[in-house]
Structure formats: C-alpha cells, structure tokens
Image 1 (tube, one colour):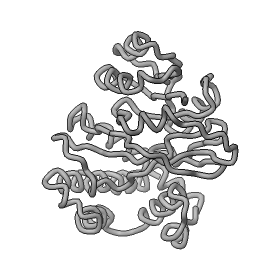
Image 2 (image 1 turned 135 degrees about the vertical axis):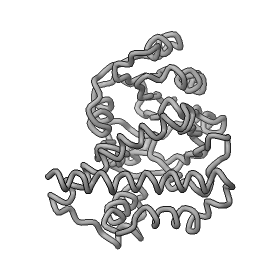
Image 3 (image 1 turned 60 degrees about the vertical axis):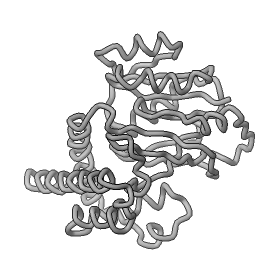
Length: 272
C-alpha cells in the first residue's frame, strides 16, 4: 500500500473526482494552500488528512510537504486535483510492495486530455513523471514546473495517471500559464545571472528522464524564435496533428505560452 499526496488551492470543482479515484487508499493527505472555497470541507468529508501551508513557490512548497507531512507508508503517490488514478494504475499501486532501499522513485505515464476529451497522445511533450517515490529520497528544484531529483534508482510502474488541464475552462488555463510565465522568466534571469551551464550531451543522451528534461529546457531557453520552434516541434516533430484539431490547437496554445515567457523575460531585463 502507498500513501497519497494531493496539492490544492481552491479545488472544490476537481477535488471530489480526484478523491473518488483514490478511495482504495487508507492514507490520503491533502496539502492545502489555505483555500477560500470548500476544498478543505470536501477533503475532510472524504476522510482525507488536511495539512495547510502558505504557498511560496512550487519546489519549496513540495519539499516542505515531503519533510513535514506524517505519511503512514514508506511510498507516496503524488497527484494534483485535476488528475485521476486510472483503474490500471490503481491495481498496480494496490499490489505495490518494493522493499529495495536502493530504489527511490517510479516513473508513471500521464495522459493529458483536451477540453473535448481527446487524449493528446502525440501533442503531450512530457508523458513520464516521477510521481511514486520515497519521500525521504525525493526533492524538487525550480520555482514552477519543478524538476524531481530522486536520490536513488528509478523504475517504471504500469498504468496511466489521467490529467484534465482544461477542466476549469480556457480562462483558468490562460491565467495559470500567465503566472507560470512570470516564474519561468524569473528563473531564466536567475540562470543568466549565475551563468548556469547546460549540457547538450546530457540533454540528448542522459538515461535519467528528469535530468535530460532539465538540460533540454535550459538549452531551449537560449534559442531564438522559441515559440515557432516549439510549435513546429509539437506539430511536426511529435506529430500533434494526429490528435486532430485538439492536438494542433494545444500546440498553438503552448507556443503562445512560450511567447509570454519571452516577453516577460524581456520586460524583466529592461527593468533590471
């Protein structure tokens, strides 16, 4: 058996479905950032344990949770309120019993779904995430879209984690990504100020998916014309067009988001 960790902030709409998908677990924790809606009431009604902390940034918040929340089991499955445990993944987690202390985490494949229910199978850039881990062997870095840093070996677990990023509509998606763009730009300036180096060799050939993605992102930020490059990569390179209109639209949204980061970075540089 594993423990479940759910991060929340005003998630009264999505939280019931999320909690319903983990009813099989006897140790569910909701890590809340002082929601002002019915999030806490819903969590308690489902029998989840609630811990609250003021949100500062993603990595600091998640690292605090792993160190301070009293999990019942040695392994923790982390999910967001707009995600659901599929039946196949539920079976894998209920049968899970890894006692090998050298293993720190498991990669799980996530399925992102568009607003119309289309699985963005090809448009999705990063399908694998380190979501099952030993809390004492995991830490996070970066202010937004944090990178998971396991202290040990990584294996794979069967089953899908289903994600519904447009569950609250397009307006919410845009507002959230505008705030993400602010943090991404701030991190870009910080990397520039500290003269952080990124490796092409690691970005292309590392067997560690998390490390590989970190260096890919760092190198990508140095390229001119990033929004167009991202759109071409998603539509042509990853064949997002095979996901139909939803795939191409999602690629366009991601390209515009990338442009937001470019504009915000220029704004911060000018203000500096």
